[in-house]
Image (cartoon, rainbow, N blue to C red; front, side, top):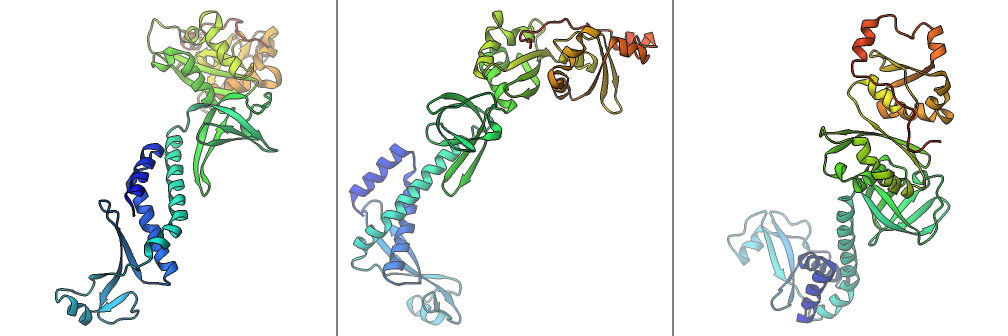
Length: 375
């Protein structure tokens, strides 16, 4: 091996980020393959590369045994002790078997193997880079489309955006710049495979972390997210500082912060509600923008019965039940919505026991008919 080749390995280490030791191991493995293939040898061999001189030496390796079954792989104890009386059963004897014209043949045969190992090492680096970015948001460029998937270029790798992870209301075209959420990174025979999403709730969470410094700094926390991508989402937030309004921080001055996220998601409506440990208050908040008169909780099956004014029943339920469905997903409670008239006829509103009302509603405030993005 010439000094020029060693210099080339050093250059590869600097340019590709692949350690020279990895490349040397690849070359040694390639030389072993070349020796066995070109000299029709089935014995165990080892190739030693001297980094200082650039020389290559091939050693055959034979195990010392009591009884020889394969002369290519084994040597008897008696024969071994002729070479060195200190050899014992289980030792390995090495003998130089470097052919005279091995350098030329090895160079030709090893080239393809070395190239493959370099490619594998590069793929390994790419995999390590992106596996650490799972559940993170990245910028990409739409490169091509087929009947099922969209392929997004992330720089060093092409990510797959499956049909079920695409926002139904969005149209994607080549060269479009989009933000995507990395859901999974896998090793494959063709290199790392990255899967991304535009519908995952994590995308919404990361967008808020990017746009709202209070969330990034941990002053405001996103407790839960319910999302029907492309149509409407609800998020619950809580402040860990008494002087911070969590909803106001997420909305921003004149709605600037949340509007940036809405624009990124193609006009998806976003309801931001304040989280509460009290399920009565939390469920009432989650049904925004409708006003809530009463919330009755059943801990046995984790369900609630919510009473709303007659004229706001359809607003509370939402188009195709969407508002109630998202509120239930956001809170983790089953929600049964009743109009005030129906609740009175059923005898569940106003409550029969005033002390129960006072206990549950000590800190409860009815929700106003207020929302930043109404249907």
